[in-house]
Length: 412
Image 1 (cartoon, rainbow, N blue to C red):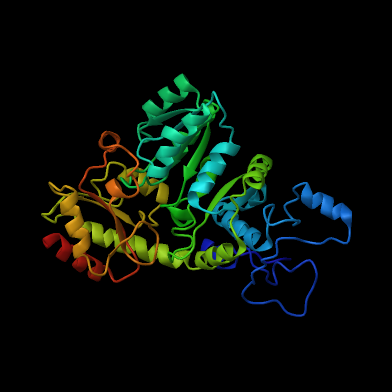
Image 2 (cartoon, rainbow, N blue to C red):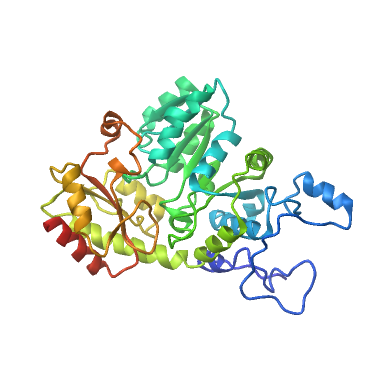
């Protein structure tokens, strides 16, 4: 009987690989420990019937790089294994498609879920800046009405769903950069009652902390660039959903060409193998850093779901089951304007000012001039992003070194 790993930690290392418990279709004398990269764009079939099936979208057959690739498929299979870890009997009923970036994955999900002229799309008001811009400005150019709602206010969400009947609602498990935590199971119930698809960007939580599909979510999205890759050296995105949605997703991806390349897929797949170790360490570090900085006199506020004073601390505790509270901390510099924040960033020595998150390194980002630069000052204020807000993505260094560097920069 074929062996299948039961632990999510083991799945992170072995999913998508060819092993004795998942032998190749054609037996070989030996199988490589590390899978190789298959860069071929085209594929040849002796049987034209199989070629016809490949052109028709058979996910197990390959015909052209834009239609699918074995190296990319191995990465996609591994993502399904992790996101469906809580429902192993249903993993076969889900698919993943990888894209060239996280934003490509979000655009793919929105488009394939039915956004058309005359439709309405809703998003959490404190979502990532590029997602906000999609809903606020890009989709309206094509006749789609874009709306925002405080996704932590379930009554407000229900009123919007009843009044506007959006095709979909997109939220983030842990929002970027304010770190609000949404009650995903309740949102899924509300969306289902109003025939609205629920899309969840699970980038900050990762499947190591929370897996939305088991709670009734329709589509899960990741910027795989972040914690899945984990090393800041590869760009990619991925969506996971039920098989009945695959034809629409695959058709849109095939036509628009936002596919992930095999070399990038191989790097992301390699990064995934250490994700359990990295996320566990980074969450533990973030908790130590947040607690230590919470009383610093230069900070007006420290936002972190693991702190008892966080507005959604109990929701986060229930969703994540004690596995951690994420690896991102938001620091509100007291009475700070842009020049003050710039001086803080320039005073850092080990922690690096860089416009990403999820690396093994500790990184800081200034949302007002980076991730949420496209928002007007009024829009940022309405969301709750002040001129003194800094996003700290905690890395895998010794937490005391992280604290020392930040404290020194704050004192400076």
